[in-house]
Length: 117
Image (tube, rainbow, N blue to C red):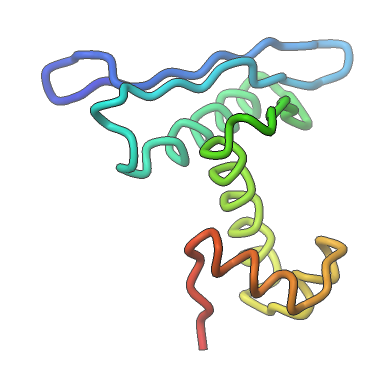
């Protein structure tokens, strides 16, 4: 990912495991000057698109507890995807995620995900 002057501002790295039809996300990095601009979600979506293009059936990654920003970005993207899959139905999404509905509401609040009426 580059800015309007073609300077790099973010990147991701994938390692492909062809036999398993899996891609492993090994790196996501964003320039400190561009953090907080929503770029991590764009990078994750770009990595997922490349994985699909290469016929991977799933994408895996390791998230370390010390990287709270990355963990929050991955959790937020995953919850948004599941909400979309379930047409915004909180009860069904919570069930799919294996969470109590109240826990999902708290998690959404923490991650800045608005509840749609």
